[in-house]
Length: 313
Ligand code: RIB
Image 1 (cartoon, rainbow, N blue to C red):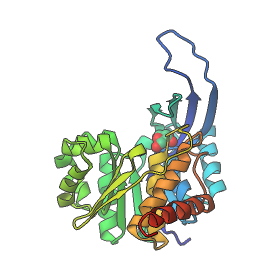
Image 2: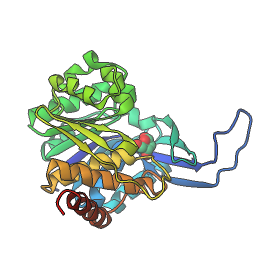
Image 3: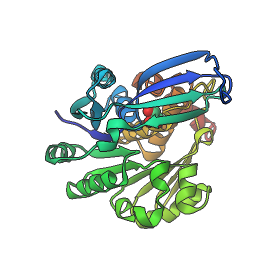
């Protein structure tokens, strides 16, 4: 199978509770809604790419249990290639319990299970070597370094969304990974962890470590793209209502990748990504809320033409 992108990372089952407030100790609180869906940052990214018309494969690990079967079926339904998804006989499928409050903000408790044991073998390496881009999200540092080296060996773009846990190791520790990264995704907390500042411009410090493009995801404030010769500030697409922000960053990264692979300019790709992430936020569930190409494209065209009309009347 010819693939454009290989995503590597967590494959979870998300159990999401929608509540008015966080329960107190010993309190049994009624949720006003709930969703159970497949999740995991890299998995959501892979599904978002598939919904945007990009051929994507996934490398990960699920348990030998009904949750693992569910995760597999959900991938197959979306057309993501899971020929390299392994089944772990000793550890269960990863599960994440997510609490979403009325403002759409989320809190998560994760049991990584089989996700903690993802490894790469020769067949995985060969699989990655056939893609144009390999994306890793929220994985162990050691695995990220392995992927980084494979990407350089085969001259494939390495796109990396380390997540806060890995960013806490600090820049010096992450240097060997970052030296292979082309596109780095960070939110403001992760940026602060690495650079000591929440100022998006501080991302420019990271360019000397390897990345050619650092993308700072600022949620409702849009995104800031840092390259050695340029800066691009992209406005957010304001959702009609903020319902659930879970997975919005995964959708943003996927849509930006999709835009670039479809030949859009970097600015257009980032605007396309803003729209996709904004649409996700309007909907419940990290997975169920991922938008499809047609809807993203139609709103993207509207937003772009409105922005351009404001310049030339
Ligand atoms: O990025 C969102 C994802 O993070 C959720 O789907 C959940 O599984 C957690 O890993």
